[in-house]
Amino acid sequence: MATRKPWHEMTKQLVDVAMGRRAADMVIRHGRWLNVHTGEIIPDTDVSVSGGRIAYVGPDADYTIGEKTEVVEAHGRYLIPGLCDGHMHVESGMVTVTEFARAVIPHGTTSMFIDPHEIANVLGLPGVRLMHDEATTLPINVYVQMPSCVPSAPGLETPGASIGPAEVAEAMTWPGIIGLGEMMNFPGIYLNDDKMHAEVAATMQAGKTVGGHYASPDLGRPFHGYVAGGPADDHEGTRLEDAIARARQGMKAMLRLGSAWYDVAAQVKAITEMGLDNRNFILCTDDSHSGTLVHEGHMNRVVRHAIAQGLSPMAAIQMATLNTAVHFGVEKDIGSITPGRYADIILSRDLVTLPIEMVIAGGEVVAVDGRLTLDLPPYAYPAFAKNTVKLGKPLTADDFNLQSPISNLTTPVKLRTIAVIENQAPTKAEERVLPVVDGRVQLDPRQDVAHIALVERHQATGGVVNGFVSGFGLNTRCAIASTVAHDSHHMIVVGTSKTNMALAANRLGAAGGGVVVYKDDAEIALVELPIAGLMSDERAEVVAEKAARMVQAFRDCGCKLNNAFMQLSLLALVVIPELRLSDLGLVDVTKFEVVSLFTD
Image (cartoon, rainbow, N blue to C red):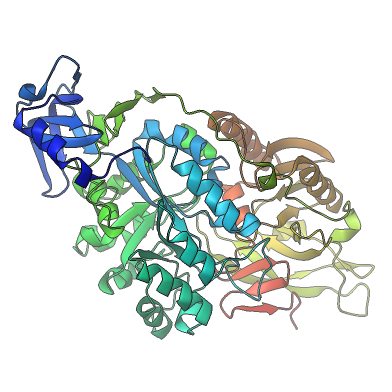
C-alpha cells in the first residue's frame, strides 16, 4: 500500500497505456466485467494494468500487450472488484495485521478499514501506531481508524491507557489514518461531552470520516442527537427499523456478519422488501474469529450470506466494494474496476456461490484457488507490546467468593444476572434467586447460571469483581478465562468452579495473556496471545487450530453457543446494553451507571 503512487502522479503513464503508446504490466483478457457503477455485467472485457493501477477497461486490449506484459486469461469468469471490509477489529482474529491479511487475501479481501481500539485500551497511542505502521507494509489496502473511546465509557471502567482529543488530532496527520473509529460513547455525543465532541471536531477538520456506534434501541431524541453530532455510519443495528432510521438520516447502515454477530438478515429487508436505495448500506464483519477466517471466509462469506437473504449479487457486491469506498472518500483508489483505480480484482466463475479463484491486488496476483502466492514475513512487535498481564498476586478460589448482603447465612438472595443472547452483541438483564451457604452465594445448575469475574490486569491491583451470567450452558466443573475482554481488556473469567477459575486466571498471567479452558482442575485448551494480551505472534492457521481446540473445549464443558468466545469477550463491554461487568462493578448500560448486584 505504501509503495503505490497516487493517481495524479501516474496520469500520463496510464494515458500512454490506454492509447497504446506504452505496454501494460498486466492484461486480463476475456472476462465478464461486473460494473458496480452502472449495475451491468459486460461480457468479453479486458483490463490493462500499469504501475498497480488500471489504465484501460474494455474490449480487445491486445494492443496494450508487450513482450514483458503478464497476460491473465479470465476464460469468461467474472471480474469483480476486490472486497472491502468497512468496519473491523483485527485483534478479534487474535492475530497481527499481517497474519490477518494472510488469512483474508485468498478470500478476496483487498481493502480493510480497521479500528485498533483493542490495543489502544492496553497500550494507548503507541499501540495504535504499531498497527498503523504494520498496515503500511502490506500488499493490500489497510486503512486505520483512530480509536475514539478509550475508555469507551469514562467513569464506568478503567483501561490500561487513555486517548483524548490531542491524540486524535496527532493521529489525523498520519498517512494511513482514514478517520475516527466507532464513537461508542453515544451518550457523550447527545449529552454534549466536551471530550467526545473535540475528537469529532478534530476528525472533521481533517476532512475525514467519523465512525458511529449507537448501541441503543431508542430511535427517539437521543438517536437524532447522536446523528447531529457527526457520526456518519453505524454497525450496531440489529432490527429492520434500525437500518431504515440510519439510512433516512444520511448515515451509512453497516450490516455485519461476524463470527457471532448475525445482523444482516433482519436489516437487509430495508432493501429487499422496502426497496430502499442500496447505496446507503455497507457490509462488514466487525469481529471475525481466526477459525472463521481460515475455514469459512471473510467478506466473501458476508456477500454470500447477503445474497442468501435475497439481495441480488450485484447489490451485495456493491455494498462490499463501491459503497464502502465512497463512504470513506477513497473511491478514486478502490471499490471498482475502472481506470485510475488500484488493480484490485477477483476472478470468479459464479456470482452466487462466489468461489474466489484468483485475487489480484495492485496489479499483482496474490492468491490462486485459496492459496496465497506471495510471502508475507511476520511483523516484529517490540518488547513493550508484550508482558502486559499484571495480576499483582496469585489468585485463589476465595477471590471468587461472593458474600450475601443478608445477615442470615442461609437465606437465598435475588441477584441481577447477565444473560447472553445467541448470535448478538447485546445482553439481557435478568434476575435469579440463588442459594446461600455460610453467607456465600452458590450456583444453581438448574438455572444455567455460572460465575463471572473481572480481574484487573493493567495496574496489578489484584482487584476482582464478581457476578453471575446465564446462557453458557456449562454443566461440568470448569472455567474459561480470557484477556480479550472488550473494551478495557482486563481478564474475564466464567466458570462453575472457583478453583478452576483461579487456575485459569493464573495460567493466563503466566502466559502473558490469551484464552484458556480448565475442566476438572486440568488445562484442556490454551491460545497464547502475548501481544498486548490480544494477539498471537504465530501464523493464522496455527492460531485457528488452537482456537478450534478452544471451541471444542467450550463444548466439552457443556457450552452450546454458536461462538461462545465472542460472546464471552463482550461481557465487559460497557457500551452495549443491557448488563455488563467492569472493574468498577456491574454496569446497567441502559442507564449508564454502576448498579448493585443484589436486588430487593
